[in-house]
Amino acid sequence: MPEIPKQMKAVQVVEFNKPYQINTVDVPSPPTPNDILVKVAVAGYCHTEQLVAEGVFKSKLPITASHEGSGTIVSVGSSVKDFAPGDRVMVGIMTHACGKCRSCQLGKDMKHYCQHSDAMTGVTRDGCFAEYVWADASECQKIPDGVTFETAAPMACAGRTAYRAVAQAKLKPGQTIGIVGAGGALGHLGIQFAKKVWELKVVGVDARDPGLDLARKTGADLVVDAREDQEKLVKQAMDFTGESEGCDATVNFSDAGSAAATACAITKMHARMIQVAQPENVSVPFAELIFRDIRIEGSLLCPAGQSQEMLNDVAKHGISVATNPSHGLDNVKEAADRAHGGKMSGKAIVIVDQEQIKEEKEKYGANI
Image 1 (cartoon, helix red, strand yellow):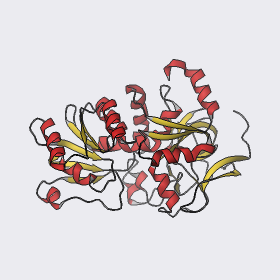
Image 2: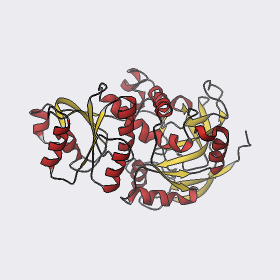
Image 3: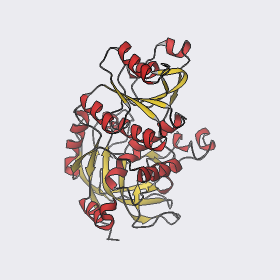
Image 4: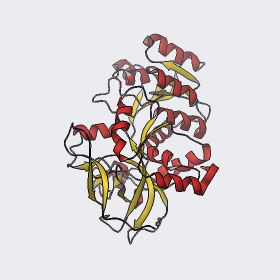
């Protein structure tokens, strides 16, 4: 492995509600023997980046942005057994779960809900908009040979979130899942996971022309425009299900004020609506809960083991991410502007290290 420098470039929030700054900072030293140091290849821009920049998470400043990253390990702690320098990895978000709280005691599938974790990548500790980032090895995943850095980085959050939500719907092949926000960064992944991994039918709902187009391209069986009259929208979804009962479960990826209500309305009685989007308040008419018995569940991220399962499925089924790349840390603002412009389809990503992309293509060629 090449020698690790002492300093690096990092894109940081230095003051809330102010533009990012590109600073020269020390290359981090992983704090425990269970951690790894990753040379970042690609970092994603997510809605969470905006929340961090606005001070919603009360992050200690300055903080390096981005909680979605992929790259190559350059060093490992003395207690790390499953990784080695040279491994391509997807960077985990969680860091050092406490092991004692109720979530941790429920087992490895729930420890990502730990409320006493040391920190979260790019949220309460330095993230992936930098040349190097350290990570908790137990929360990272090896990237399969058939998956690129450019695909793996957005999978660190968008992919893990969409995969977990579809899995949580607990449907069987041939059943129908509704996806509200179907043409967004998470929604278009949710469609592919639903179709290719779980063999479900998909009713996709979106309110933007680029989103409607992406939902069609990624395989939704029925695409419904949320700008239509609500009664007409619901009727289209109901008619599609044959018995006019609605979707067997629905996932809401949209934080629009009416999105949760729409998600419940297209869901059949006594079934689940999985809420993923994070508006300030989730608003649903009481009749959906009381008279139709719609059960609303929240969903967060895949735990570590399920995250590796997700990456393996991405490779096996050819799951793709609609990416909008910017090149170099100097162009993070470009990625942010794209993400907030309202016209983008898919995910904004930043190519941090073009050399790793080049080496990846030389090694795997047409297989990646």
